[in-house]
Length: 220
Length: 45
Length: 219
Image (cartoon, rainbow over all chains, first blue to last red):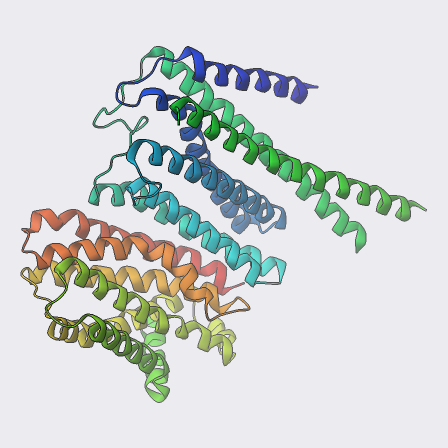
């Protein structure tokens, strides 16, 4: 009952976000109508990073207490990260085409998300290459943690070496976009709504894993 | 193309991505639940 | 630490008996260098392209040899004996030292050859050498831990490059950028962020490797 009411709240929040993004929030200077993309594109990128962080957390827990469950949870979180990463790449690429003139031009952000997708594609390649469940779990957990410690290098080092055209709303160092109160309200509620959606999807996935493990138990 | 439609397309892409993922997981859960019920019935008999 | 040195000594002796990794890595480097030199020729490419080519040659030739060190232990089933006599961290450090030595040997051959054949002129030798040294530590650190992962999986060949490439990309990117700056006579201050990145990456990846290796080795 509690979960159901949360879902209803989430539904209205998401509807409000869409309304707010299209009609309520004012436009930023220099971006025009494309300001509205911000409220959908940035949350997907944010969830990508969150999902991979959650995945790395589960991988760490797996290495600590060696329960197969946590490895499957980590896989689920990384899968979701890959999904949102692809969404962020596709939507960002469309945005880039509209405002910079080409779908892809190796902007540092584009480079980092591309490498992030590459890393986690490699993670799934590794998973498919090992057959024994416990060995696969240990190896992929180690690779996941290893990959996760290199992520800061892509986020901080690569943009420092190459200059960027990317509007930078959160880590606002040069102040490329100044958000006013209305924009910030829509942006933050969008961010939290999408994060809630992510955790809902993750929970669904975890339920699925629970059922799978139960079936395996019964079959043996 | 008018910018507002681009925003719309981006929005739709994200939502189709999320929904198709949720739907496939939901389908999987349903079939597995059925299987689970069957298995536990067999065990009880 | 002494045990790590013993593991290193053992690997060196074993390697010089067969020279498998050494031959593979040297020949790969020479072949790619020849292919690049044939198709481009001296004097036609600028420092931007040349520094990228140098790092690509270094990276892919190291990929051809670094994995061998753990795969050999699994193939000859000597891993279990090694597990009995030493701790996991000393095994890792010994293997890491071996890979670092291997990469330095390759660089000693390939880099002067590349500079001669491709007419790659370095103005700031200090920055260049420093970036190569830090880069080598990063490549060897990442390569060693990925090699350990690979040796336990079912398919060993192609997967190594696939797994190592995205993790080691910061090294390649910063290395290329540092080499470019060293070749275009930029003062040290300008290349300092690349050198910092290379150094930090080497430290992080080696520390992570030592910490995580235990979980793979005793799997």
